[in-house]
Image (tube, rainbow over all chains, first blue to last red; front, side):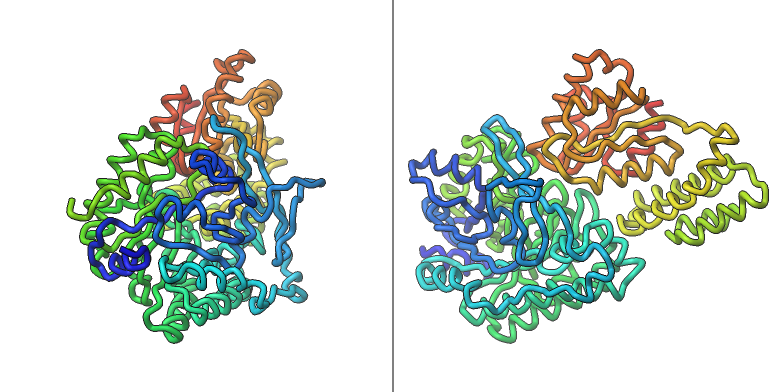
Length: 367
Length: 207
Protein backbone atom coordinates (compact mmCIF):
# COMPACT_ATOMS: atom_id res chain seq x y z
CA UNK A 1 0.00 0.00 0.00
CA UNK A 2 1.27 3.47 -0.83
CA UNK A 3 2.10 5.59 2.17
CA UNK A 4 -0.33 8.31 1.11
CA UNK A 5 -3.18 5.83 0.63
CA UNK A 6 -2.58 4.48 4.12
CA UNK A 7 -3.00 7.97 5.57
CA UNK A 8 -6.01 8.76 3.38
CA UNK A 9 -7.77 5.57 4.51
CA UNK A 10 -7.07 6.27 8.18
CA UNK A 11 -8.39 9.83 7.83
CA UNK A 12 -11.52 8.40 6.19
CA UNK A 13 -12.05 6.50 9.49
CA UNK A 14 -11.12 3.20 7.92
CA UNK A 15 -8.48 0.71 9.00
CA UNK A 16 -5.56 0.37 6.54
CA UNK A 17 -3.09 -2.56 6.54
CA UNK A 18 -1.28 -0.97 9.49
CA UNK A 19 -1.61 2.31 11.33
CA UNK A 20 0.04 5.21 9.48
CA UNK A 21 3.09 6.56 11.30
CA UNK A 22 4.76 9.94 11.68
CA UNK A 23 7.85 10.53 13.78
CA UNK A 24 10.09 13.58 14.02
CA UNK A 25 13.35 14.00 15.92
CA UNK A 26 15.45 16.66 17.58
CA UNK A 27 18.69 17.27 15.64
CA UNK A 28 20.79 15.28 18.10
CA UNK A 29 18.48 12.26 18.14
CA UNK A 30 18.50 12.38 14.33
CA UNK A 31 22.31 12.15 14.43
CA UNK A 32 22.18 9.12 16.71
CA UNK A 33 19.62 7.49 14.46
CA UNK A 34 21.71 8.17 11.36
CA UNK A 35 24.68 6.48 13.04
CA UNK A 36 22.48 3.60 14.09
CA UNK A 37 21.23 3.13 10.53
CA UNK A 38 24.63 3.70 8.94
CA UNK A 39 23.37 6.72 7.02
CA UNK A 40 25.95 9.38 6.18
CA UNK A 41 25.80 12.63 8.12
CA UNK A 42 23.84 15.43 6.51
CA UNK A 43 23.17 19.06 7.36
CA UNK A 44 21.60 19.62 10.78
CA UNK A 45 18.22 17.92 10.92
CA UNK A 46 15.28 20.29 11.30
CA UNK A 47 12.33 18.48 12.86
CA UNK A 48 9.76 20.79 11.25
CA UNK A 49 11.07 20.01 7.79
CA UNK A 50 13.18 23.07 6.93
CA UNK A 51 16.09 21.71 4.86
CA UNK A 52 15.15 18.14 5.70
CA UNK A 53 16.29 15.43 3.29
CA UNK A 54 13.61 13.02 4.60
CA UNK A 55 16.18 10.23 4.43
CA UNK A 56 15.40 9.13 8.00
CA UNK A 57 11.64 9.39 7.60
CA UNK A 58 11.76 7.29 4.45
CA UNK A 59 14.18 4.75 5.93
CA UNK A 60 11.76 4.23 8.82
CA UNK A 61 8.82 3.68 6.47
CA UNK A 62 6.94 6.74 7.73
CA UNK A 63 3.83 7.73 5.84
CA UNK A 64 3.72 11.55 6.04
CA UNK A 65 6.39 14.09 5.12
CA UNK A 66 6.32 17.58 6.64
CA UNK A 67 7.36 20.84 5.01
CA UNK A 68 7.20 24.05 7.00
CA UNK A 69 6.71 27.73 6.20
CA UNK A 70 6.55 30.15 9.10
CA UNK A 71 7.79 30.96 12.52
CA UNK A 72 8.25 27.31 13.63
CA UNK A 73 11.29 27.21 11.32
CA UNK A 74 12.98 29.56 13.80
CA UNK A 75 13.42 26.58 16.13
CA UNK A 76 16.70 24.77 15.49
CA UNK A 77 17.66 27.37 12.88
CA UNK A 78 21.31 26.82 13.74
CA UNK A 79 23.37 24.87 16.25
CA UNK A 80 26.15 27.46 16.14
CA UNK A 81 27.02 29.43 19.24
CA UNK A 82 28.04 33.06 19.00
CA UNK A 83 28.88 35.81 21.42
CA UNK A 84 26.73 37.80 23.83
CA UNK A 85 24.33 35.00 24.63
CA UNK A 86 22.25 35.73 21.53
CA UNK A 87 22.92 33.26 18.78
CA UNK A 88 20.58 34.35 16.02
CA UNK A 89 17.74 36.68 15.16
CA UNK A 90 14.87 35.32 13.08
CA UNK A 91 12.91 37.11 10.35
CA UNK A 92 10.41 38.31 12.99
CA UNK A 93 13.11 40.14 14.95
CA UNK A 94 12.91 37.54 17.73
CA UNK A 95 16.33 36.68 19.18
CA UNK A 96 17.31 33.12 20.14
CA UNK A 97 19.84 31.31 22.29
CA UNK A 98 21.13 27.77 21.95
CA UNK A 99 20.98 26.24 25.40
CA UNK A 100 22.91 23.01 25.99
CA UNK A 101 21.67 20.11 28.12
CA UNK A 102 23.26 16.83 29.01
CA UNK A 103 21.80 13.33 28.79
CA UNK A 104 23.23 9.83 29.13
CA UNK A 105 23.42 9.82 25.32
CA UNK A 106 25.40 13.02 24.97
CA UNK A 107 24.96 16.76 24.93
CA UNK A 108 22.09 18.33 23.04
CA UNK A 109 20.78 21.83 22.68
CA UNK A 110 17.41 23.48 22.64
CA UNK A 111 16.80 26.78 20.93
CA UNK A 112 15.18 29.19 23.36
CA UNK A 113 13.78 32.66 22.80
CA UNK A 114 16.03 35.34 24.27
CA UNK A 115 14.15 38.56 23.57
CA UNK A 116 10.87 39.87 22.20
CA UNK A 117 10.68 42.75 19.68
CA UNK A 118 7.15 43.80 20.78
CA UNK A 119 7.78 43.76 24.53
CA UNK A 120 6.98 47.49 24.69
CA UNK A 121 3.56 48.80 23.62
CA UNK A 122 4.97 51.58 21.43
CA UNK A 123 7.01 49.08 19.38
CA UNK A 124 3.75 48.06 17.65
CA UNK A 125 3.65 51.34 15.71
CA UNK A 126 6.86 50.71 13.81
CA UNK A 127 7.05 46.91 13.69
CA UNK A 128 7.52 45.51 10.17
CA UNK A 129 6.18 41.93 10.00
CA UNK A 130 7.99 39.60 7.59
CA UNK A 131 6.58 39.10 4.09
CA UNK A 132 4.97 35.64 3.72
CA UNK A 133 4.91 35.75 -0.09
CA UNK A 134 8.64 35.66 -0.80
CA UNK A 135 9.03 32.84 -3.39
CA UNK A 136 12.10 31.38 -1.68
CA UNK A 137 9.96 30.41 1.34
CA UNK A 138 8.14 27.87 -0.83
CA UNK A 139 11.05 26.36 -2.77
CA UNK A 140 11.33 23.39 -0.46
CA UNK A 141 7.58 22.72 -0.44
CA UNK A 142 7.70 22.69 -4.25
CA UNK A 143 10.50 20.14 -4.17
CA UNK A 144 8.79 17.91 -1.60
CA UNK A 145 5.50 17.90 -3.51
CA UNK A 146 7.22 17.20 -6.80
CA UNK A 147 9.54 14.48 -5.52
CA UNK A 148 7.42 12.71 -2.95
CA UNK A 149 3.69 13.38 -3.24
CA UNK A 150 3.08 10.42 -5.51
CA UNK A 151 4.15 8.16 -2.64
CA UNK A 152 3.73 10.14 0.59
CA UNK A 153 1.05 12.24 2.33
CA UNK A 154 2.45 15.78 2.28
CA UNK A 155 1.79 18.08 5.21
CA UNK A 156 2.26 21.84 5.01
CA UNK A 157 3.35 23.02 8.46
CA UNK A 158 2.26 26.40 9.80
CA UNK A 159 2.19 25.56 13.52
CA UNK A 160 2.58 28.22 16.20
CA UNK A 161 0.01 29.83 13.96
CA UNK A 162 -1.40 32.59 16.16
CA UNK A 163 -0.82 32.50 19.91
CA UNK A 164 2.69 31.04 20.11
CA UNK A 165 4.25 33.37 17.57
CA UNK A 166 2.36 36.25 19.19
CA UNK A 167 3.83 35.56 22.61
CA UNK A 168 7.27 35.02 21.10
CA UNK A 169 6.96 38.56 19.72
CA UNK A 170 5.63 40.03 22.96
CA UNK A 171 6.70 37.78 25.86
CA UNK A 172 4.56 35.01 27.37
CA UNK A 173 3.55 36.57 30.69
CA UNK A 174 2.81 39.92 29.08
CA UNK A 175 0.72 38.32 26.32
CA UNK A 176 -1.26 36.33 28.88
CA UNK A 177 -1.94 39.51 30.86
CA UNK A 178 -2.78 41.44 27.67
CA UNK A 179 -5.60 38.98 26.97
CA UNK A 180 -7.29 40.23 30.14
CA UNK A 181 -6.02 43.79 30.57
CA UNK A 182 -5.45 45.00 27.00
CA UNK A 183 -7.77 43.00 24.73
CA UNK A 184 -7.48 45.39 21.78
CA UNK A 185 -3.69 45.30 21.82
CA UNK A 186 -3.83 41.52 22.22
CA UNK A 187 -6.02 41.28 19.12
CA UNK A 188 -3.62 43.49 17.18
CA UNK A 189 -0.73 41.26 18.31
CA UNK A 190 -2.48 37.99 17.40
CA UNK A 191 -3.35 39.29 13.94
CA UNK A 192 0.34 39.68 13.00
CA UNK A 193 1.21 35.95 12.93
CA UNK A 194 -2.37 34.98 12.03
CA UNK A 195 -2.20 36.99 8.84
CA UNK A 196 1.27 35.67 7.95
CA UNK A 197 0.48 31.99 8.57
CA UNK A 198 -2.92 32.18 6.86
CA UNK A 199 -1.23 33.55 3.74
CA UNK A 200 1.42 30.82 3.92
CA UNK A 201 -1.12 28.03 4.50
CA UNK A 202 -3.31 29.21 1.60
CA UNK A 203 -0.27 29.24 -0.65
CA UNK A 204 0.68 25.70 0.44
CA UNK A 205 -2.86 24.47 -0.24
CA UNK A 206 -2.80 26.10 -3.66
CA UNK A 207 0.46 24.27 -4.31
CA UNK A 208 -1.29 20.99 -3.53
CA UNK A 209 -0.31 19.77 -0.05
CA UNK A 210 -2.63 17.10 1.34
CA UNK A 211 -2.94 18.53 4.83
CA UNK A 212 -2.14 21.70 6.75
CA UNK A 213 -0.82 21.37 10.30
CA UNK A 214 -1.81 24.40 12.32
CA UNK A 215 -2.31 25.23 15.99
CA UNK A 216 -0.83 26.67 19.15
CA UNK A 217 0.05 25.26 22.55
CA UNK A 218 -2.85 26.39 24.71
CA UNK A 219 -2.86 23.44 27.10
CA UNK A 220 -0.78 22.95 30.20
CA UNK A 221 -0.16 19.61 31.88
CA UNK A 222 -3.55 19.19 33.52
CA UNK A 223 -5.73 22.05 32.30
CA UNK A 224 -5.82 24.77 29.68
CA UNK A 225 -3.25 27.54 29.88
CA UNK A 226 -5.90 30.15 29.14
CA UNK A 227 -9.57 29.71 29.94
CA UNK A 228 -11.78 28.05 27.31
CA UNK A 229 -13.69 31.34 27.09
CA UNK A 230 -10.49 33.29 26.39
CA UNK A 231 -9.65 30.79 23.66
CA UNK A 232 -13.17 31.16 22.24
CA UNK A 233 -12.90 34.92 22.26
CA UNK A 234 -9.45 35.36 20.74
CA UNK A 235 -8.41 32.19 18.95
CA UNK A 236 -11.53 30.33 17.86
CA UNK A 237 -12.77 33.00 15.40
CA UNK A 238 -9.35 33.30 13.81
CA UNK A 239 -8.95 29.53 13.58
CA UNK A 240 -12.47 29.26 12.07
CA UNK A 241 -11.45 31.75 9.36
CA UNK A 242 -8.18 29.88 8.88
CA UNK A 243 -9.82 26.49 8.32
CA UNK A 244 -12.66 27.89 6.16
CA UNK A 245 -10.19 29.77 3.94
CA UNK A 246 -8.19 26.61 3.26
CA UNK A 247 -11.28 24.49 2.53
CA UNK A 248 -12.49 27.17 0.14
CA UNK A 249 -9.35 26.64 -1.94
CA UNK A 250 -9.53 22.85 -1.73
CA UNK A 251 -12.54 21.25 0.01
CA UNK A 252 -10.62 17.97 0.28
CA UNK A 253 -7.60 19.37 2.09
CA UNK A 254 -7.34 18.11 5.66
CA UNK A 255 -6.54 20.37 8.59
CA UNK A 256 -4.75 19.19 11.74
CA UNK A 257 -4.64 21.29 14.91
CA UNK A 258 -1.81 21.03 17.41
CA UNK A 259 -1.81 21.82 21.07
CA UNK A 260 0.25 20.21 23.77
CA UNK A 261 -1.36 19.50 27.10
CA UNK A 262 -4.98 19.21 28.14
CA UNK A 263 -7.38 21.00 25.80
CA UNK A 264 -10.44 18.84 26.41
CA UNK A 265 -12.82 21.83 26.87
CA UNK A 266 -12.25 23.12 23.32
CA UNK A 267 -12.29 19.89 21.30
CA UNK A 268 -16.00 20.28 20.51
CA UNK A 269 -15.31 23.87 19.38
CA UNK A 270 -12.57 22.65 17.03
CA UNK A 271 -14.93 20.09 15.51
CA UNK A 272 -17.55 22.82 15.09
CA UNK A 273 -15.17 24.97 13.02
CA UNK A 274 -14.31 22.12 10.69
CA UNK A 275 -11.21 20.48 12.14
CA UNK A 276 -10.25 17.07 10.74
CA UNK A 277 -7.32 15.91 12.90
CA UNK A 278 -6.27 16.61 16.50
CA UNK A 279 -2.56 16.45 17.37
CA UNK A 280 -0.73 15.31 19.52
CA UNK A 281 -3.18 13.97 22.19
CA UNK A 282 -0.60 14.08 24.99
CA UNK A 283 -1.52 10.96 26.99
CA UNK A 284 -0.38 12.26 30.39
CA UNK A 285 -2.75 15.19 29.88
CA UNK A 286 -5.71 13.67 28.04
CA UNK A 287 -6.79 10.03 28.07
CA UNK A 288 -6.55 8.94 24.41
CA UNK A 289 -9.19 6.20 24.78
CA UNK A 290 -11.68 8.66 26.29
CA UNK A 291 -10.94 11.29 23.63
CA UNK A 292 -11.64 8.65 20.96
CA UNK A 293 -14.84 7.60 22.69
CA UNK A 294 -16.13 11.15 22.97
CA UNK A 295 -14.99 12.61 19.64
CA UNK A 296 -13.81 9.71 17.46
CA UNK A 297 -16.81 9.84 15.13
CA UNK A 298 -16.13 13.44 14.16
CA UNK A 299 -12.37 13.70 14.52
CA UNK A 300 -9.19 11.84 13.61
CA UNK A 301 -6.05 11.86 15.75
CA UNK A 302 -2.29 12.11 15.23
CA UNK A 303 0.29 11.30 17.91
CA UNK A 304 -0.61 9.72 21.29
CA UNK A 305 2.68 7.97 22.23
CA UNK A 306 3.99 9.37 25.51
CA UNK A 307 7.10 11.50 25.10
CA UNK A 308 7.10 12.61 28.75
CA UNK A 309 7.66 9.24 30.39
CA UNK A 310 7.35 6.05 28.33
CA UNK A 311 9.77 6.89 25.50
CA UNK A 312 12.57 8.47 27.58
CA UNK A 313 12.17 6.56 30.85
CA UNK A 314 10.11 3.41 30.14
CA UNK A 315 11.27 -0.03 29.02
CA UNK A 316 11.02 -1.37 25.44
CA UNK A 317 8.22 -3.68 26.61
CA UNK A 318 6.31 -0.72 28.03
CA UNK A 319 6.74 1.19 24.78
CA UNK A 320 5.49 -1.76 22.75
CA UNK A 321 2.53 -2.21 25.09
CA UNK A 322 1.65 1.47 24.77
CA UNK A 323 1.63 1.20 20.96
CA UNK A 324 -0.68 -1.84 21.11
CA UNK A 325 -2.97 -0.10 23.60
CA UNK A 326 -3.25 2.94 21.34
CA UNK A 327 -4.01 0.83 18.28
CA UNK A 328 -6.83 -0.86 20.18
CA UNK A 329 -8.27 2.33 21.63
CA UNK A 330 -7.68 5.69 19.95
CA UNK A 331 -6.66 3.84 16.76
CA UNK A 332 -9.60 1.45 16.74
CA UNK A 333 -11.17 1.25 13.26
CA UNK A 334 -8.73 3.79 11.82
CA UNK A 335 -8.79 7.50 12.47
CA UNK A 336 -5.24 7.58 13.87
CA UNK A 337 -1.81 8.54 12.59
CA UNK A 338 0.38 7.18 15.35
CA UNK A 339 3.65 8.65 16.61
CA UNK A 340 5.29 10.31 19.58
CA UNK A 341 3.64 13.43 20.96
CA UNK A 342 6.76 15.51 20.25
CA UNK A 343 10.04 15.21 18.39
CA UNK A 344 11.90 12.20 19.80
CA UNK A 345 14.36 13.69 22.26
CA UNK A 346 18.01 12.88 22.88
CA UNK A 347 17.16 11.25 26.23
CA UNK A 348 15.28 8.41 24.47
CA UNK A 349 17.11 5.04 24.39
CA UNK A 350 17.35 3.60 20.86
CA UNK A 351 15.87 0.33 22.22
CA UNK A 352 12.71 2.24 23.12
CA UNK A 353 12.66 4.03 19.80
CA UNK A 354 12.90 0.78 17.84
CA UNK A 355 10.34 -0.89 20.10
CA UNK A 356 7.92 1.88 19.05
CA UNK A 357 8.76 1.76 15.33
CA UNK A 358 8.72 -2.03 15.14
CA UNK A 359 5.46 -2.36 17.04
CA UNK A 360 3.81 0.14 14.72
CA UNK A 361 5.19 -1.42 11.55
CA UNK A 362 4.61 -5.02 12.54
CA UNK A 363 1.14 -4.80 14.03
CA UNK A 364 -1.48 -5.34 11.33
CA UNK A 365 -4.86 -3.70 11.72
CA UNK A 366 -6.55 -7.07 12.04
CA UNK A 367 -5.42 -7.23 15.67
CA UNK B 1 -11.71 48.74 53.42
CA UNK B 2 -10.04 45.31 53.66
CA UNK B 3 -12.78 43.94 51.46
CA UNK B 4 -11.90 46.50 48.77
CA UNK B 5 -8.28 45.32 48.85
CA UNK B 6 -9.44 41.68 48.76
CA UNK B 7 -11.70 42.30 45.78
CA UNK B 8 -9.14 44.36 43.87
CA UNK B 9 -6.43 41.68 44.27
CA UNK B 10 -8.89 38.97 43.25
CA UNK B 11 -9.89 40.85 40.11
CA UNK B 12 -6.29 41.79 39.33
CA UNK B 13 -6.83 45.53 39.59
CA UNK B 14 -3.35 46.78 40.53
CA UNK B 15 -4.07 50.55 40.81
CA UNK B 16 -7.10 49.91 43.00
CA UNK B 17 -5.11 47.53 45.20
CA UNK B 18 -2.33 50.10 45.69
CA UNK B 19 -4.88 52.78 46.45
CA UNK B 20 -6.75 50.51 48.86
CA UNK B 21 -3.59 49.58 50.75
CA UNK B 22 -2.57 53.24 51.06
CA UNK B 23 -6.02 54.18 52.35
CA UNK B 24 -5.94 51.35 54.88
CA UNK B 25 -2.51 52.45 56.13
CA UNK B 26 -3.65 56.07 56.31
CA UNK B 27 -6.69 54.98 58.28
CA UNK B 28 -4.36 53.35 60.81
CA UNK B 29 -5.27 49.72 60.15
CA UNK B 30 -2.83 47.11 61.41
CA UNK B 31 -0.34 46.22 58.59
CA UNK B 32 -0.51 42.53 59.53
CA UNK B 33 -4.28 42.64 59.20
CA UNK B 34 -4.08 44.35 55.80
CA UNK B 35 -1.68 41.63 54.66
CA UNK B 36 -3.56 38.66 56.06
CA UNK B 37 -7.18 39.64 55.64
CA UNK B 38 -6.75 41.69 52.47
CA UNK B 39 -4.03 40.25 50.32
CA UNK B 40 -3.22 36.76 51.59
CA UNK B 41 -6.92 35.93 51.84
CA UNK B 42 -7.42 37.10 48.26
CA UNK B 43 -4.49 35.06 46.94
CA UNK B 44 -5.81 32.00 48.81
CA UNK B 45 -9.09 32.47 46.96
CA UNK B 46 -7.13 32.84 43.68
CA UNK B 47 -5.44 29.51 44.45
CA UNK B 48 -8.75 27.82 45.18
CA UNK B 49 -10.36 29.17 42.03
CA UNK B 50 -7.31 28.05 40.00
CA UNK B 51 -7.52 24.55 41.42
CA UNK B 52 -11.27 24.47 40.76
CA UNK B 53 -10.72 25.50 37.12
CA UNK B 54 -12.52 28.83 37.55
CA UNK B 55 -9.32 30.85 37.06
CA UNK B 56 -6.42 30.31 34.66
CA UNK B 57 -2.85 31.54 34.35
CA UNK B 58 -3.69 35.02 32.93
CA UNK B 59 -6.07 35.81 35.79
CA UNK B 60 -3.57 34.43 38.33
CA UNK B 61 -0.80 36.58 36.85
CA UNK B 62 -2.78 39.80 37.09
CA UNK B 63 -3.94 39.00 40.63
CA UNK B 64 -0.33 38.40 41.65
CA UNK B 65 0.74 41.63 39.99
CA UNK B 66 -1.93 43.53 41.94
CA UNK B 67 -0.77 41.86 45.15
CA UNK B 68 2.84 42.83 44.46
CA UNK B 69 1.91 46.48 43.95
CA UNK B 70 0.00 46.49 47.21
CA UNK B 71 2.81 44.67 48.99
CA UNK B 72 5.40 47.21 47.79
CA UNK B 73 3.45 49.92 49.62
CA UNK B 74 2.79 47.76 52.66
CA UNK B 75 6.29 46.30 53.07
CA UNK B 76 7.93 49.13 55.10
CA UNK B 77 4.93 49.20 57.41
CA UNK B 78 5.16 45.44 57.93
CA UNK B 79 8.82 45.85 58.88
CA UNK B 80 7.98 48.67 61.31
CA UNK B 81 5.24 46.58 62.88
CA UNK B 82 7.59 43.60 63.20
CA UNK B 83 5.47 41.34 60.98
CA UNK B 84 7.68 38.43 59.89
CA UNK B 85 7.19 36.24 56.80
CA UNK B 86 5.76 32.80 57.60
CA UNK B 87 8.84 31.21 56.07
CA UNK B 88 11.59 31.57 53.51
CA UNK B 89 11.82 29.73 50.18
CA UNK B 90 14.69 29.59 47.68
CA UNK B 91 13.31 28.90 44.22
CA UNK B 92 14.81 28.22 40.80
CA UNK B 93 14.55 26.43 37.45
CA UNK B 94 17.24 23.76 37.13
CA UNK B 95 20.35 23.85 34.97
CA UNK B 96 19.79 23.71 31.20
CA UNK B 97 16.15 24.77 31.55
CA UNK B 98 15.09 28.33 30.76
CA UNK B 99 11.37 27.95 31.38
CA UNK B 100 10.18 30.23 34.11
CA UNK B 101 6.46 30.89 33.98
CA UNK B 102 5.58 27.92 36.21
CA UNK B 103 8.36 28.78 38.62
CA UNK B 104 7.24 32.44 38.66
CA UNK B 105 3.66 31.45 39.42
CA UNK B 106 4.88 29.31 42.31
CA UNK B 107 6.86 32.29 43.62
CA UNK B 108 3.82 34.54 43.37
CA UNK B 109 1.54 32.09 45.17
CA UNK B 110 4.16 31.61 47.90
CA UNK B 111 4.42 35.38 48.37
CA UNK B 112 0.67 35.45 48.35
CA UNK B 113 0.77 32.99 51.25
CA UNK B 114 3.10 35.17 53.30
CA UNK B 115 6.45 33.58 52.40
CA UNK B 116 9.63 35.44 51.59
CA UNK B 117 10.80 34.16 48.21
CA UNK B 118 14.37 34.26 46.94
CA UNK B 119 14.08 33.59 43.22
CA UNK B 120 17.35 32.41 41.67
CA UNK B 121 15.92 32.57 38.14
CA UNK B 122 16.47 29.95 35.44
CA UNK B 123 19.31 27.64 34.37
CA UNK B 124 20.54 27.38 37.98
CA UNK B 125 23.37 24.86 38.55
CA UNK B 126 23.45 22.67 41.69
CA UNK B 127 26.14 24.88 43.25
CA UNK B 128 23.84 27.88 42.77
CA UNK B 129 21.20 26.25 44.95
CA UNK B 130 23.80 25.23 47.55
CA UNK B 131 25.23 28.76 47.76
CA UNK B 132 21.77 30.34 48.07
CA UNK B 133 20.79 27.93 50.84
CA UNK B 134 24.00 28.70 52.72
CA UNK B 135 23.46 32.43 52.32
CA UNK B 136 19.71 32.76 52.95
CA UNK B 137 19.04 29.80 55.30
CA UNK B 138 15.57 29.04 53.91
CA UNK B 139 13.29 26.36 55.32
CA UNK B 140 12.37 25.23 51.81
CA UNK B 141 14.03 25.01 48.40
CA UNK B 142 11.81 24.71 45.33
CA UNK B 143 13.09 23.15 42.08
CA UNK B 144 11.33 23.53 38.72
CA UNK B 145 11.85 21.78 35.35
CA UNK B 146 9.75 21.69 32.19
CA UNK B 147 11.90 19.30 30.17
CA UNK B 148 12.43 15.55 30.49
CA UNK B 149 16.09 16.23 29.68
CA UNK B 150 16.60 18.63 32.60
CA UNK B 151 14.31 16.98 35.17
CA UNK B 152 17.01 14.39 36.16
CA UNK B 153 19.12 17.40 37.23
CA UNK B 154 16.91 17.63 40.31
CA UNK B 155 18.55 14.51 41.67
CA UNK B 156 21.99 16.04 41.15
CA UNK B 157 20.87 19.08 43.14
CA UNK B 158 19.71 16.92 46.04
CA UNK B 159 23.05 15.08 45.93
CA UNK B 160 24.86 18.43 45.96
CA UNK B 161 22.84 19.50 49.02
CA UNK B 162 23.89 16.30 50.77
CA UNK B 163 27.54 16.78 49.81
CA UNK B 164 27.46 20.36 51.11
CA UNK B 165 25.83 19.14 54.33
CA UNK B 166 22.78 21.39 53.97
CA UNK B 167 20.25 18.71 52.99
CA UNK B 168 19.11 18.33 56.62
CA UNK B 169 18.47 22.06 56.92
CA UNK B 170 15.95 22.41 54.08
CA UNK B 171 12.91 20.67 52.73
CA UNK B 172 13.03 20.07 48.97
CA UNK B 173 9.91 20.67 46.91
CA UNK B 174 9.80 19.81 43.18
CA UNK B 175 7.44 20.51 40.30
CA UNK B 176 7.10 21.09 36.57
CA UNK B 177 5.21 19.46 33.70
CA UNK B 178 7.05 16.09 33.48
CA UNK B 179 7.63 15.83 37.26
CA UNK B 180 5.44 13.37 39.14
CA UNK B 181 4.91 12.37 42.73
CA UNK B 182 6.69 9.06 42.00
CA UNK B 183 9.70 10.89 40.61
CA UNK B 184 9.80 13.14 43.68
CA UNK B 185 9.86 10.05 45.91
CA UNK B 186 12.54 8.36 43.80
CA UNK B 187 14.96 11.25 44.08
CA UNK B 188 14.28 11.78 47.78
CA UNK B 189 12.43 15.11 47.58
CA UNK B 190 10.19 16.05 50.50
CA UNK B 191 7.25 17.26 48.46
CA UNK B 192 5.79 17.39 44.97
CA UNK B 193 3.41 20.09 43.83
CA UNK B 194 1.36 19.75 40.66
CA UNK B 195 0.74 23.48 40.30
CA UNK B 196 1.42 26.87 41.87
CA UNK B 197 -1.52 26.73 44.20
CA UNK B 198 -0.56 23.25 45.42
CA UNK B 199 3.00 24.49 45.92
CA UNK B 200 1.79 27.13 48.39
CA UNK B 201 -0.26 24.53 50.25
CA UNK B 202 2.68 22.09 50.35
CA UNK B 203 5.09 24.79 51.52
CA UNK B 204 2.88 25.59 54.52
CA UNK B 205 2.69 21.87 55.30
CA UNK B 206 6.48 21.56 55.16
CA UNK B 207 7.12 24.27 57.76
